[in-house]
Image 1: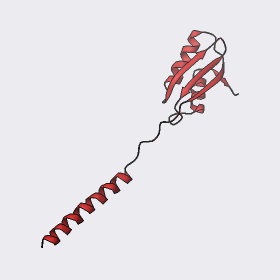
Image 2 (image 1 turned 120 degrees about the vertical axis):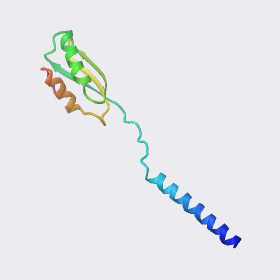
Image 3 (image 1 turned 180 degrees about the horizontal axis):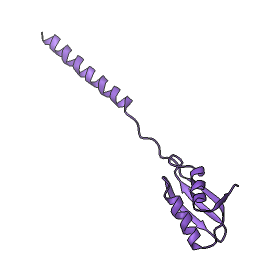
Image 4 (image 1 turned 135 degrees about the horizontal axis):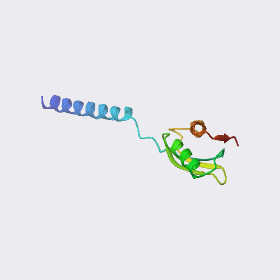
Length: 105
């Protein structure tokens, strides 16, 4: 009788251990962080500080943007973004919606 009780306890413990490891295996794992991407656009039509601010405001509204630096003096806009949240096409469209032309490289 004692042997049956011990075997039953061991069986229950083994079952519990197996089911816990199965749950852990199916739970989503934390993904590695995505490396930010830096891109510099040549933007035509910027003539002043207000133009820079307009572009910065439009691009910053997109998800995943960590930096926007528009410079009317050299007609560039530097953007650092998370590629899992936005892409270069969306950034170029945000600039174009502000009335500026993104020149392809």
